[in-house]
Amino acid sequence: MACPRGLGDNAGPDDRSPWYGERVVNVRNDLDFGLKSPPGGAPVEWRIADAAVPYEQAVATMEARTAAIAAGREPELVWLIEHPPLYTAGTSAKPAQVIEARFPIHESGRGGQMTYHGPGQRVAYVMLDLKRRGPDVRRFVASLEEWIIRTLAAFNVRGERREDRIGVWVRRPEKGLGFEDKIAAIGIRVKQWVTLHGIAINVDPDLSHFSGIVPCGVSEQCYGVTSLTDLGLTMTMPEVDTVLRREFEALFGPTDYAVASTENNSPGRRNFISSAVPSR
Image (cartoon, rainbow, N blue to C red; front, side, top):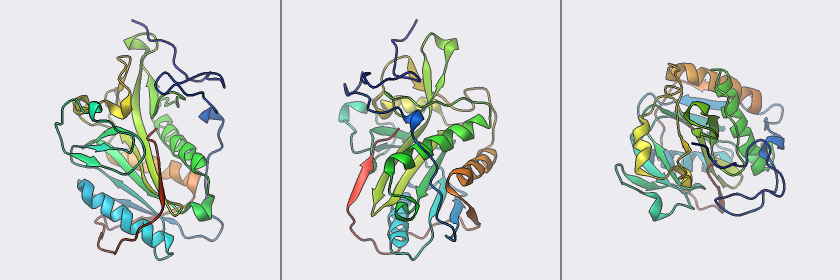
C-alpha cells in the first residue's frame, strides 16, 4: 500500500494542504530558530516532576507562573512532567474527533485539536517571556520543533517537519510507501507575550490509548503514532530529560535545575489578552 504524496521536504508555495485547502505560504524548514535571552538575564528554571501531575493542577500552575513571569516576579520555567491518561481538546477540536472517551477530556485553551497525554510521554511545559527574547511566535514554534528534532537525533531518530501535518514525524518505509508516524506534538498559547503549554514526546506510552481520538485531526491510515520504544529504542525518561536540557540550552540559553518538583498553584490569577497556536 502507498500513501498519496504529502507536503514534505519539497513543499512549494503553490502546494495546498489536503486537510485545510490552504496554500502553503512558507516552508518551516526555512524558518530561523533559536530564541536566547538577552545577556545578563536569569537562567530558565528547569524543573522535573517526580510523580504524575493532574491536568487541572498543571494548568493552574502554568496560569499562575506565567502571570508572575509577565509581572517580573518569577523567572522563566521549563516544567517536565507526565500526566495520568487523559485527552485534551484544543481550540480547534471537534466532537467527531472523539472516537471513544476512554479517559477524561479536558479543554486546554491551547491551539490545535485533540491530543492524548499519559504515562511514558514526556510533556515539557515551556513558560518563556517573548518580550525579552523576541516577540516572534513563528520563530518560537520553529525553535520548539528544532528542539524536538535535535533531541530525537541524539538517539539516531530522524524527526521531520511537515507543512500539511502537525507534529514531528518519523518515516516508516517498512509499513509501506509514504507511511509516517507522529512521535511528538507541539501546542502553545501566549499571554502577554509569555508562553504556556509546550511539547510532548512519546518515549514509552501505551500507544493504544491514542485510538480513542483522532490525534490532532489526522485520520489517514498511512499516518499513525509511534514512540522511541516502538522504534526499538529503550531509553529511560532521565536519559531523554538529559538530552532535552542540553538541546534546550543550545537554542534558548542556560537553565538552572530546581530540586523541588511540586508546583504551588495558589498565586492569584489575572485575565490577560491571549492567543492560541495550533498543535504541530
